Length: 286
Image 1 (cartoon, rainbow, N blue to C red):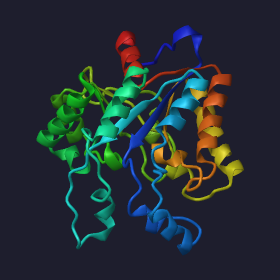
Image 2 (image 1 turned 120 degrees about the vertical axis):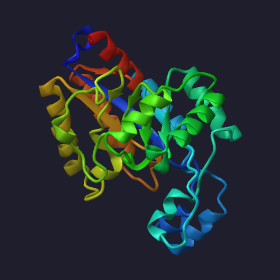
Image 3 (image 1 turned 90 degrees about the vertical axis):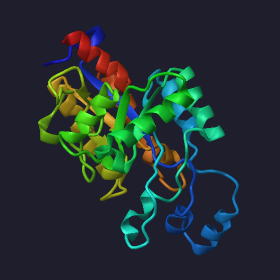
């Protein structure tokens, strides 16, 4: 199936943000700065460098585009014997935290989409997935229909089946953790269960893009390659920029690349839509 992009647009762009952590905690030690002195100083700094929602809103309002924010309520307990998994359990937040619930409502009220960032173990546990969905809906005040699993942790096709049973209309987890690109040459959303449940593939993630180099010229060449592919295939480019990476001191240049992607795609006559809007277009084309 091919999308018919509205208003004779050439291809589609879906901007997304995974909200893994809303406050910097252990990262003050692991990714604190350029010296131990500065790291220690930051421990007493009341500013929250990960609270970048106003920056994102300002950028997207400037270009008249909207994105989807996936919020996470991780429940996995820390296992001291598995240090590689500690990051899943440290620095967690809850949807009903006053500041978190306020930004969720503010984003929704101003036209951004709110989706669930399913916890690591929810990909195989339908009951847990339903609990997280209901908790987010309680804060938001309406049904949540979209999801992306944390760490893109999906078990195919089991995760899709329990997501569908839990009431989600789409998933946005189908992509690579460690590199960018179109997984299985999927240039458009697809129906993995042969029903109205949609998979929106992920193609361009910040961490994977910046993992091998900080040279913005090289990074931009990779971005252009993906943009040109999406344009040539009349497909969909789904972009993931975590909200914390708009913190310029810790992630220099990352937000600038995000802005360049938006500007380049606008110049190439792209359609911009939230994940829900992409899903609604898919239903119309069906």
